[in-house]
Length: 300
Image 1 (cartoon, rainbow, N blue to C red):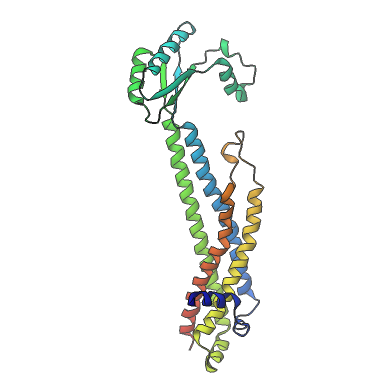
Image 2: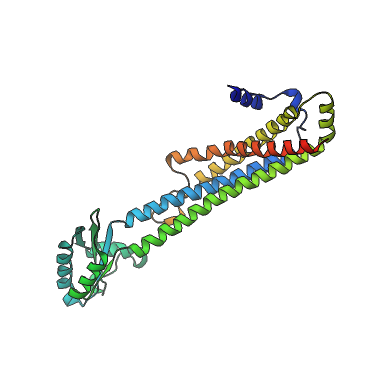
């Protein structure tokens, strides 16, 4: 209950103690603008971080539990080797299904680069076999050796060389995003601290007078903490809302756009940016409180 009372006192404030802090000036604008700019950057960093996680999951999910066998052989031997490879795959533990890719599917895969009229049947294009694993998976190294021995033109690609770098890169980008969020919070704390110190220094004589008439340091410090906390909150809110609007205007996820689309928030993730003004207020509260009471100890 005591904590609730203190929070209520911080929010409602005291009209007389609030006059200790000048309502305008460079310190006020510095806090509001810094909070707005940091919140705007935080929204974009958060959007990139969350979108990277979704993208990594989508790519990893599309490549997981799948593999491809590529058969490069003369046209006369291609059908026989395809049947032989399908028989090997059917007898391999850990493989749920395997099917040869039809020429029409190959044509559709190559259409974005060579057009829809590509004569697939007359070109020396390798035969592809789509392999689906079971939950336990299969021995990729053993299968590769068997294919090399029994079907020299067949090559196994278990997608691991594609999947692992994607997941690692996404993890690093996500870590850099969280690092950017941390640095943004640290920069906001530094800005608020400087603004609070400037306001305290400008009101040094007022603080001395307040002490002479019996005001306690807690009373004086609370005025600075409240004013700068609210400035940081409303400044961050002013930066968060345009940031969310800008993210909402980004292109939606699409296959044609690849990883350059779908960089916004999705579903309940739109609630995450709303926490940025609250976090900014908390950062400003502790930064201002530390700066205020340190300065009050120095003022005699």
